[in-house]
Length: 303
Image (cartoon, rainbow, N blue to C red; front, side):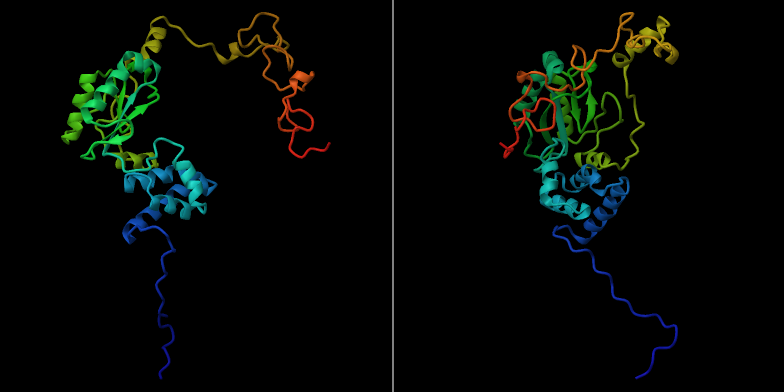
């Protein structure tokens, strides 16, 4: 036997990949792990990265799959049950394969009375699917949306969270047909194009696609109040006008009546908690030690 020469490199064994219960292939797992590390680095507590990490796995699988749940749990050191609890709470996380495009129709109060219900019904019949169902070609998942936060453009349809304002049943079905045909469509506001559901999920995970500054974010219906204020030279009060003078009664800064004073706890207008003062104030079964709790309300209280 001959001794290894001094300074010769010592053979090293390859470091095995961390054990995983997921079924991702090596390349996909490596890519996901690198992106997950970037997400976790944003937060003081790693588990705070769960929401964007769910979007991340959704950007790969097209929904929050079994493997996606296990991956999130392994990366954050929590249980799969904890991940599932979050994934099933928020509607943007899909627990079954989603279409290339999510077409969401606002059917909340204002959009509904402006035609949102009619738009959804027309799309449902035209596409042959109901709420949270996907067309046979996998192109469109149709959804009711509670509110798109765009009431000044009602009725509104969103495609992968891009705005299509002032829609009608006819314009919405034409939009759906163009999406299914693979044509490029341009939102009314915001980005210049519509990306796929997977691509949008990656953006929601916090990875920019470079489209954030495209287009116009606020149109005239949103800015009309500002325009009127400028035409009339209306301005907001200065901070000095908002602050009450020293010794001025409470309420003066908020425009309350002259001489108004803050209500005491328990008086009308006060939001402060108060100590129960009558038997009717005590709520049987309340948590002991909190306002409104009856003495001995907890199970097993001393008799």
